[in-house]
Image (cartoon, rainbow, N blue to C red; front, side):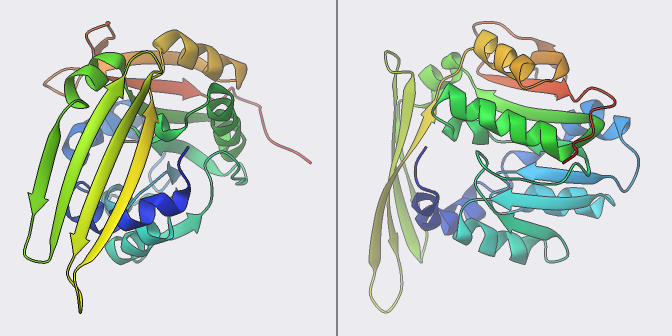
Length: 254
């Protein structure tokens, strides 16, 4: 995984151009597969929350939402976007939270940034520990069809106060995708930032098996159709949604 500080130069551009982008897709899925199964005002952890737009939406629905991210700059924007919510700066691979959450979510392919399967298992272990018994875990991942389709192109963003040049590529033999960016930001002088973010392509079987190893049950792996309904996952699915449940009676004790 890239150092979390590598995400800091991206935070301003992400907040403006990507932060709200995924919510229309993911929120109906959250409503149908998580929110309807937990009480009103439940505690929810948004893992790898980025700039906090989804936290704001969920908090507006009355949920007690905590956002966790490793990037200080992402969290700076998150606190502006959702000032009444709690935010924690921590690493998804090592965070520790008490088992107080009825649900943990991680959206917009955040967990593809975890580059080793063993580290993904650590994330799943940490999530299970943070969930109340019978708590739900939902996350999505880019799949190979998505990397092949969406990660082999260049594009530019041009605004009055910043310019962003993006070069993306997918390397199937390594199962790695790279997002290389150059950002020019206006200040007293224009400043240049260069950074590379990397994602790993996981297969459905290895994700499901790792969830089982972490103690999750009732595991589902699905794709999403144009109506935002979850459907059967196939090799042509560009994105997968995974859902798991912490078994009842699994309180974490010292």
